[in-house]
Image (cartoon, rainbow, N blue to C red; front, top):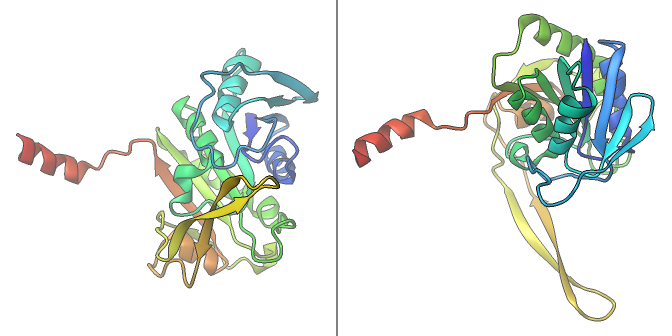
Length: 254
């Protein structure tokens, strides 16, 4: 089985090596195509106004001056065009991709693009807590991911569905099980603007999140799962249509 590995944290991110290790536990035909630079938060964006440059950084390993979506397209339609990948694994992201994170995440978007191209795809993310941002517990995903992916692939993933998996901030032995969970919604999160001034007195701004209290208490969500040290597994659909309201709109608008 040929596997394409990518991420949004960039070609030098430690989580990319973890993802490659996970892929190699499933197959010996693993190819890495990742962004040259950190592309966190770029979502499903394409580089339409800039050329893509491709750099061979090692055996079956390439860096692309583009987004995670660009990398999947470059890998599947150019580098591996003669024998496209049978699986896309994106990650392992440094930090969770839970709740509304999935709409911003380049990690999830890479798996989404794989799904668009008709390739079974997973997005993998490793949570971290205060004080260990630079040293996430990578072994959690490294140990548990291969078996989870094997079991899901054996069952088969429906067309136009990708799988978003988040590993909790704990060691492999501390994991309290698996939770097939819905996408949550944070209850107490505010996006704020952090204004600052540079050395010449000119203003500039950082986007920042301020989280307070419990993020979600609704049972069955990805947020609750990882807070309970469970591995959350959430199937996501490409089709974003809200069918009940579509029916209502048809009635209202005739």
